[in-house]
Length: 311
Figure 1 (cartoon, helix red, strand yellow):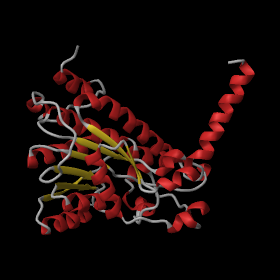
Figure 2 (figure 1 turned 90 degrees about the vertical axis):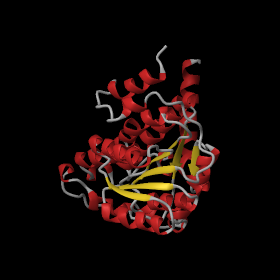
Figure 3 (figure 1 turned 135 degrees about the vertical axis):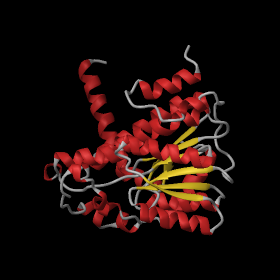
Figure 4 (figure 1 turned 90 degrees about the horizontal axis):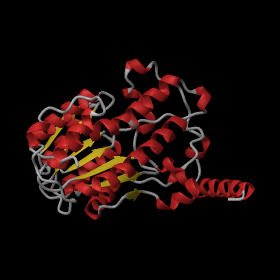
């Protein structure tokens, strides 16, 4: 039976990734507890300079949390951190590229170095492209997956071994999407990446239960963000930006008008952390349109094949 220390070391080493500096020094700590009182605790939010991430930062600060605002657009992160500081909480802005594991490890080093502990990790940075699959490029898929999937993976490997062994409470929130429940047409890279994020989150929740660490998946629908302009931060190695148009089903109708403000989303997340909720929906009433038809098609296909085979 592996000790907690050995499990933490193996978590990074088995992946072939460097162990975050300083991990050995804190691997002797106690296992965590689910977060109940946020006041005075420390949160790290990737993509915290705008959109849902900024909404989380504001909502956490309202509850008296100190916040590490991490973003590839560090000027935006600094502006949000100043807002938090003006309201009396400690906040720092950190420049991070979640597609680069070493950058996320550096973020963890900075967060733990500045505050000594991290109680709440929000792997939130995300990007989006829209359009028919064959109008997109292979490089588009690489970019979307590196941010939306590996950004989450990098956050897990850089932070979670330390969170397991630190004293006190801990919780993780990964931002997926209501698109996680759809068939993905006209949003295939984004939807596929968010399906992956959802599975990662469910698996992590199950595996972290023995450590007393809560894990939640955030599944936002319509939120007033600038995600459709996320190619402004596309790294050159993924090629030139791809021109696209928002799919008609997203650009019109009741769903287009059903939009939530980011800070209200942040408040939902804040309460979900306290409740240790597995699923956080901004628009639970969208689930029927996104999921039920697809699920019924799957159930029907399985039932038909079972009958044909005599199962």
